[in-house]
Length: 223
Image (cartoon, rainbow, N blue to C red; front, side, top):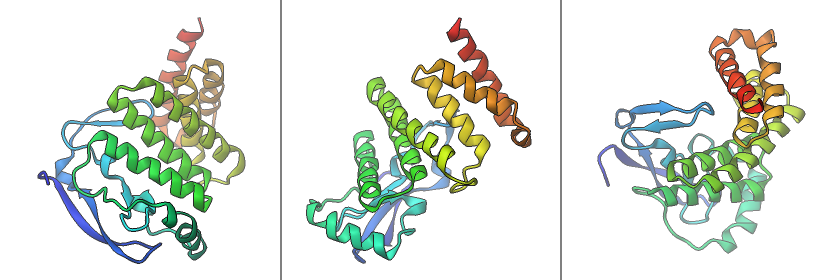
């Protein structure tokens, strides 16, 4: 395994068996640039490749920081519905972009079986979109941006903020940004305008500035 990666032994909260999850050492990551939807580009090892953990024994998958946050009822559902369909294989060790995409799509399958929240789907779909961006597959990237947009909109319409560390202003920005990326320019203008005129959002000047920049880009598209 390449330098900068290491394995951590994890006990799966679904099947109670141990497996190896691969993590990235902090010093091994170096940011090259950031996109307007918060997608980070790295110079060497990309930690997003390793952010989805998959239990090789039962197939349960989730983002690393959420892996153990699962109820007993959800674990029962996954044991009964996911495990019988799982073809046992390991996704630990060094990953290429296709293995990273596979891991995140397994996260979506687990989310679907256990009835995860809209914010969980939004984040996973956005990361899959980023992975396809790294790969240069624009069609698949836009498909998953649309999925993510749908879930972020559901979060805004149905949840009370903050939602899993996501505040309302950032959610509004993401809805505007994702609408922009899929070509819904009129919708993007509406959401960016809502953010720029928000009193609450003024506590986040960097976000307001980003919204203003994107607002101008969208207005140019609409001309």
